[in-house]
Image 1 (cartoon, rainbow, N blue to C red):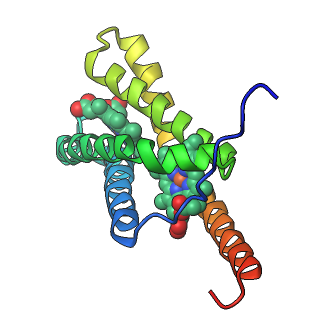
Image 2 (cartoon, rainbow, N blue to C red):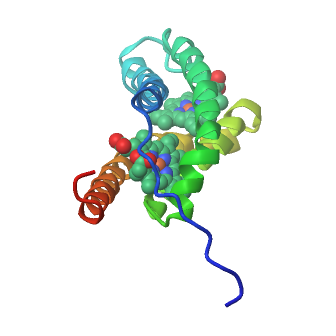
Length: 165
Ligand code: HEM
Ligand code: HEM
């Protein structure tokens, strides 16, 4: 054998307040993006000048920028324990990686939305950001549902091995 297997800590469920914080910030981020889309694609169609943004658009982007920063800090804080433990225990990996990839695409295209100046590139970046952004909620939902199942199975296993604990 090349090396001894390292001891694997079974992942602990995220604490309730931490979990709630992820959901609140995630919802604020997603909600402000979707609200911008409603203002931009639906309300403006009914409004006056098609070339001008709807009045509420910059406000949604202000909320979106702030929640995006808070979300990225939160995402970073998940790496040292949550992602690491789940990864080493081989649990919930596929949906976790899908979620991380989704966040990476949104971060890169979000950066592009700030700094890309060519109209054609900006328009493409915007479409990718919007489509992946709307779908991101599904990636989180799947991860959470599978994560809860993992947690139930782990607790069940502990129960069987140590009856009475
Ligand atoms: C490769 C990356 C990841 C792996 C391997 C992973 C692994 C896991 C595992 C094993 C669970 C069930 C145990 C627990 O609740 O801790 C879980 C649940 C959860 N994960 Fe992840 N995760 C990853 C990435 C992420 C990311 C990027 C987020 C948030 C943006 C996230 C948010 C959550 C949440 C909110 C739950 C809680 C479900 C609940 O207990 O109700 N995870 N994950
Ligand atoms: C990691 C997560 C995310 C980051 C870092 C991020 C970042 C950004 C940034 C920096 C902008 C440009 C703001 C501006 O031009 O003032 C933006 C715009 C936008 N974001 Fe996000 N975002 C994320 C997730 C989402 C999600 C989940 C949605 C849901 C639909 C979304 C929808 C939008 C929309 C509709 C715009 C406006 C597009 C445009 O101006 O053409 N974003 N985002």
